[in-house]
Each structure stands twice: as C-alpha cells, then as structure tokens.
Length: 80
Image (cartoon, rainbow, N blue to C red):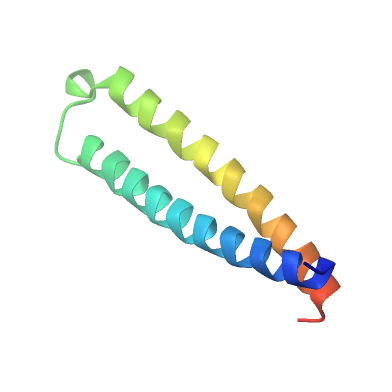
C-alpha cells in the first residue's frame, strides 16, 4: 500500500474520530448546562457532578484539538 493511500485512510479515520468527539463535547456541554440551572440556589448545585462533567469536556476538547492538528497536517500533505 502506498504512503498516500495510507494517509488517505488515516484521514478518514481521524475525521470519524473528530465527528465522534464533536458529538461527545456537545453532549457534555448540554449536561453542564442542565447541571447549572439559572433558577437553582448555588448551595443546591451538584459541585462534584459539575466538576466531573467539566473535566470530561476539557479532556475531549484537548483530544479534538489534537485530531484537528493531525488532520491539518494530512490535508496539507495530501494537497487538500
């Protein structure tokens, strides 16, 4: 298999992973919004749940950023 073919396949995989992570980040963002209702008292908020969701969102965003960088390199190398 040629290097170009391998890179094209890797780009397809990375695009799928980016799509999955984007959906995951969107879901975590929605979860955080639900855990932070405007009409609820601050004392009643689930601090641990909010922290865990925020941490998971940050991790997913970092992974997404890495994938976007890798895709940019492949796009540049493949001429797209």
